[in-house]
Amino acid sequence: VPAPDFVAVSLMDADEDGPREPLPMAGPDAPPPPPEPDEPEVPHVHGVVCARGHFNDPNSPFCATCGISMVQQTHNLVEGPRPPLGVLVLDDGSTYVVDRDIVGGREPDTDGGGAGSARGIALPDPERAISRVHARVTLHDWEVRVADAGSANGTFVATRDATQWTPVAPNAPVTLTPGMHVLVGPRVLSFDSHRRS
Image 1 (cartoon, rainbow, N blue to C red):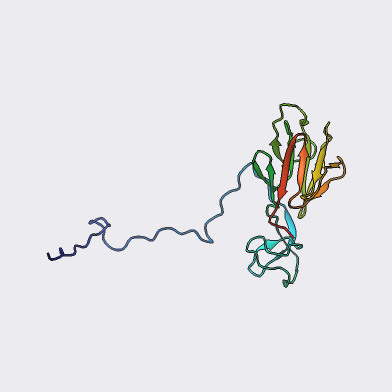
Image 2 (cartoon, rainbow, N blue to C red):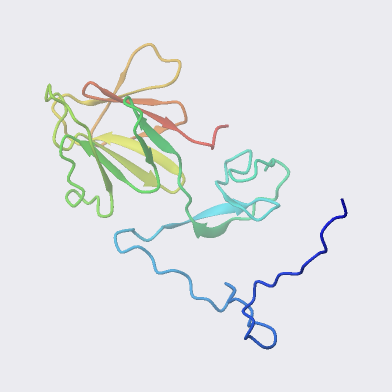
């Protein structure tokens, strides 16, 4: 059986003459989208740029974006917007990006105590062992620090290999490193980051 003859089909309207106008393209003339009204401005910090142009912590052995080694890189400090420094994972699996200060408690108040643009993490606690404002996580340059907020039962930290909890004083913040745990009442938060050494 012979194949049927080929018939060309046009997707353009029959009454259109000439070529169509090109579709608009996003480019340097297009304005960037406006920032979200509730998002705080990202602070600028000093860091280094990898060979592929990604902004990094000056103490990081590998690029956080592409993973190449930073050991052979000349560390000329430049200023740029600070990327997220890691995540806090609550014992129920809830995950919070550490891109600004965080206030944790039963009813965290993000306006008081100089927190400013802090994110509040409400920690449900039927036993009421967690204070209304229990702990504060603050970002200082490339460091993530935790301090007790004057809670009744205290805030504690433990490294990955530790066998006991270490108390955190209200005016003596402790720097969190990847793998550390924070005990707030009966709840445990784990800090993790791509900036492992």
